[in-house]
Length: 221
Image 1 (cartoon, rainbow, N blue to C red):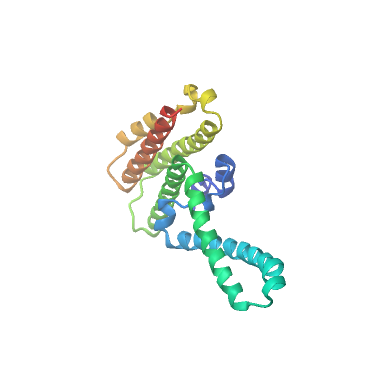
Image 2 (spheres, rainbow, N blue to C red):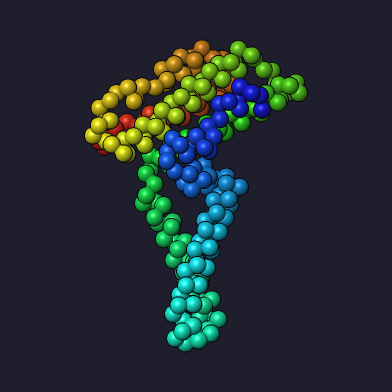
């Protein structure tokens, strides 16, 4: 991947700082569709539930079961299964209730944005091998569009968090909702119909969806 693309990625650490949550802990459509990310998410959840279940069942077994009825391995196993299932279901329900829908959609937009960065990287590799007629002007337009969308995504994540924390103070501050949609539309109109033109169109759609979510959030304040 070329340096100008690598610098456009929004790292997990930056997402954590912007949202206040770990992005790996938020199950979203893009993650569900990605087999590797989906497996990683559930592996993390099951590992955490396993550790918590061992601690809880160990305390119950050692403090209650052993002193009252003595050794009961089968009871301990059954108790472990029940506690693990309750914890797993409870965590899933808690995450759904605690994670705002707008955050899920914004993080999904970030996933789509990263996927388009990968698409540009693939085009770069095809151009190097001679399998794609690569226009440098069109590529520069895509990089500019990616930069503009990155700015809007970062601002949207900041704004969503600020509005969650203090709706009355920030809902009427219109500068929080300034965006680059018009600039991206202008780039799209000046771009030829090509692979890069399709990428710019998808980037524009992502930004339009992001701004729509922010308007919904603003209207709820």
